[in-house]
Length: 570
Ligand code: ADP
Ligand code: MG
Image 1 (cartoon, rainbow, N blue to C red):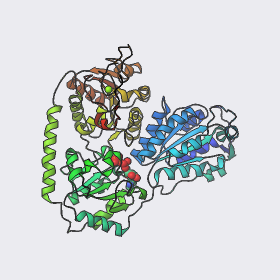
Image 2 (image 1 turned 120 degrees about the vertical axis):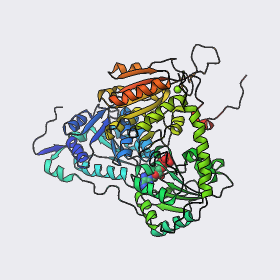
Image 3 (image 1 turned 30 degrees about the horizontal axis):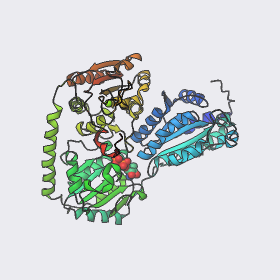
């Protein structure tokens, strides 16, 4: 970098870095290139951790999950046009999942872009980003950088968290201004995500509904995990005595082995409950929109909902007691108003759940213990379930179809924010980005359990994992294809079916190419041993876990979302 700065001058590069540092941003995830290469170099020189990826989507996913884990916006830095578009997928995904993130992208010159004269990587990025994130800003003057970064941070973390786009045209970086004025132009954001307290009348209304319940249920969502109100949430469950189920990324908020967990009786409690308290969980497709067969029609259920976003209320069904506010404040308010006269739910309800739960757990246990070869999903997951039980502070990253759906049910979580997965869109490709950021942000060991197809979307980042020597152990559930490896091409042509991959591929060799450890395993015992060794050593490791190609079902648990052709062609 041959950026020459007079002692009494500053410039766009330095102002961006100073503004981020002033606001406690310690890490930037990105991919270097024109016009932000020097920004990355200078940020590193200024003490920011700069983590370079091989593809922007993975850097963006890393930033997004950093936001989820820390409640501070994760920052992703990309080049213009194609790099920006790659990062945008992650920004949109972050926004959909309510993760705070800022995508900072270099862009080309306004004069040329606006007249569409064909600049290098020309694209009207601000306009394209706008509908896909919570807020989008462009900075044209170095003196505005401080304010722009402050606005981006506030937009990302206040209210319902989400993605923010910050457009920085190339020319901005070399704009100079007086250093002292520059320093004064920076803003340290005070109280970026202010507490939002519920009205006392709303708290009373909600408790009245809850008290009237014969078969109450609490549903914890990833908003509850994000809120970091772990003690209050635990108290709410235990003081009320109400059974709860965790959504996928809320697993571990209370240990999955908690006596009030109804996770193993999920379909029963959804169907039979009469009052449901939603804590940071939306009634979207993942909860069948709060209606229909899964919820036990004819429809008489009452919903209470805690959410920071007022417009979430009544989005799918009527919410009889909306509690708008941040989860920490709302749950504290509920606890403060639950006086000594609080009665635990009728034993008839809790006993019925317990019986169902015990039966389901016993049914599952019989599938987990086998040391079979080839492995099926259950026998392989049985081994990994023990790993997490023995190492509850490890972070589990999980994606795939069957690999995701079955791992969610089989692997118990014991601590908050330890399970990171495909989220609201059920998107594939989050794996390596999440794994890198989880290791960087928490310093804890990471176990990434990946379907072979899911892994492919971000697999090149094994180089990144080796480069930064991160304590990440990747297990690829290799069943030779998408859903299964056994589909055939009905025409007899030598092309394989669209869902089939190279048979018996050795993903472990990819890791060895970059200096990490690669292991091929064919039994649950071997798998357990290999994971233990990886996690004890902290060495980047990829374990190719050979799974029966015939194991696995179409689209995992969500096959019903797949449209079927009813037309038979001759
Ligand atoms: P899940 O998929 O686990 O059910 P969702 O992503 O559907 O979770 O829902 C999370 C909800 O949590 C969102 O509606 C979001 O507005 C809300 N939320 C996020 N952070 C907070 C917070 N600190 N306080 C209250 N609500 C929050
Ligand atoms: Mg597969």
